Length: 89
Image (cartoon, rainbow, N blue to C red; front, side):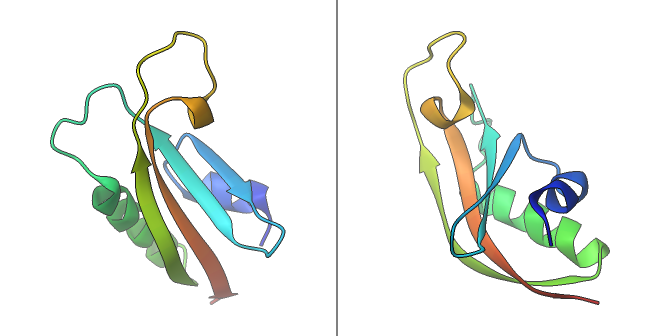
């Protein structure tokens, strides 16, 4: 699957694809409101299952940075989930 196809399926701010063929989905936050990277992972799992896509979650995490207006998502606070697409049903 392509990055564009994954972007249409997921409800995240950014999707990137690694050289190894894995995807990294990122969702930025200013306030956590009790949420964690596990919540993002559950959302991604739900979106992929609805689309009939088999996946493997590889890793996840949280990056916290002090707010800087106009900075890119990767340099701001965000949760990320790294996953691989096994096959599309």
